[in-house]
Image (cartoon, rainbow, N blue to C red):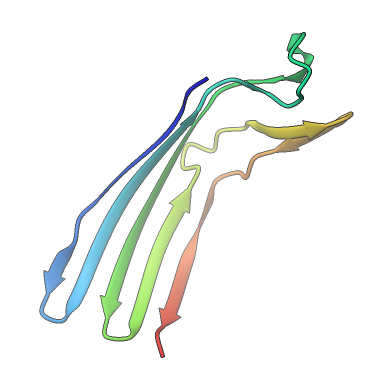
Length: 100
C-alpha cells in the first residue's frame, strides 16, 4: 500500500570539477506476488534499501564509487509458481564514464 523513495545529494564545486555525494533510501511495503490476494502464501514482506554514491566529474570524465543495499537485506523481489526471486544482495563498485 505504500512505496516511496528519497534521496539527498550535494554538489561541491572545485573550479571546473565537481564532487557529488548522494544518499538514497527506498521503502516498499508488503505486497502480493499474485493477483490472488487470498492468503499469505503470495505475500512478500516489506523492505528498506539504502544506497550511497560519490561522483567526481572533471571535464568529460566522471568516476563514481557506489554501494546498493548497504544493509545487505535479504528480501523476496517476486515469485512465479514455486519459484522465488530474491533481490540483489549488497553491491558496491566503481563506474568510469567519458562523454564524447
